[in-house]
Length: 458
Image 1 (cartoon, rainbow, N blue to C red):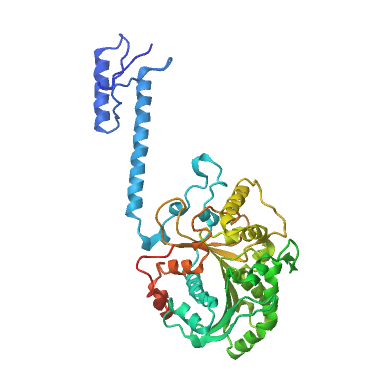
Image 2 (tube, rainbow, N blue to C red):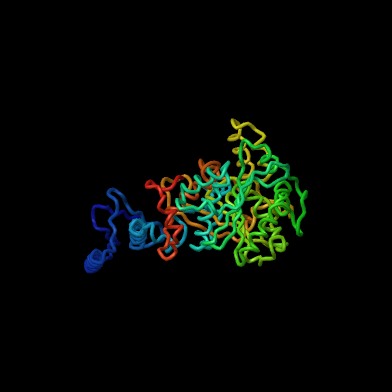
């Protein structure tokens, strides 16, 4: 027998005629207790509860009430959760926040579509440990120093660096060269810092007006350049070999004159491909620079291309750190795809990027070919936003031990092919990092004094 209960009256159970008045009184007492305990949830006006066949009326009303209570409870919990999020949204303590929900979001794609189509660049470092503040500080220092490699002369080099480091001493520049011969290293300068006990070499990145840069970047075929049991990029290995022959003797002279100093090799874009390969040669042959310990040799690459096979990338990870900024496209495309981008006119570049993105989105598996090239060494991935969402978060850094299975997909982002590839953008953004007071060395205080009031240039 079906029974209906009006929402305008208390949700009592309408029983059979055999129910006595005492039973009705007990029901009223139970109802009063439920109201006092806050367990009763009113039913929407005009709605009725229909008792299914074979189920007691009291059970049907209770199921209806429990469903409404559960829905209201979940809604209330979500509201409290959002309030707590807003209350704890303090940029100064983001390192203590659990998880990356504010940056990464769901792994699945939008609108229940596959995640490969709507891939977010921040997901490439999901689950990886955070970088230490010391590591970030080293990367920050070299991010503005490498800008000097884009200068045409020493005066311009000093100007470029002093925009971020006002007390920069140009007397530390011991060599500044623009080699023109085929297969030579891109323009570079060598800087000797007695304060940091470091000898550093900075290599310029890709220049759109220099034909030799395109030749170096495009000159590669699969398994064309075997090296140490793996494979490397042929076009960028040539400048590394040239550096070992023509630059290493000068480095050896300086390191022998400054015992105990470390050697750091830094590059951006194209230079981020040459620098790690040159570093690998020095690690394998430390006698080239005076026989210093390989532990004193390290390479930092900003926006690196794919230059070595996976086995080599893992093997030399202790000596190479590649820095990827959010959605940067350069570490995510192969040499073959890069050729298609540059062969096309700039008017069609966007179309080619979209075609490559669609191809990668619907690619089910990736090749396990040992000749396939990857970004070199371990990767420090800087993330600061969730694509498609307004606003920026404090910049974070994650250490990706290996690029295997990561940085495989192009990200459709307005900054992926522009700002995220520029080392200047990363430099400005790192000025907003919450630096601990005990780590603020004189040079860091000097650099932070140039921070723009309106934040980073992202």
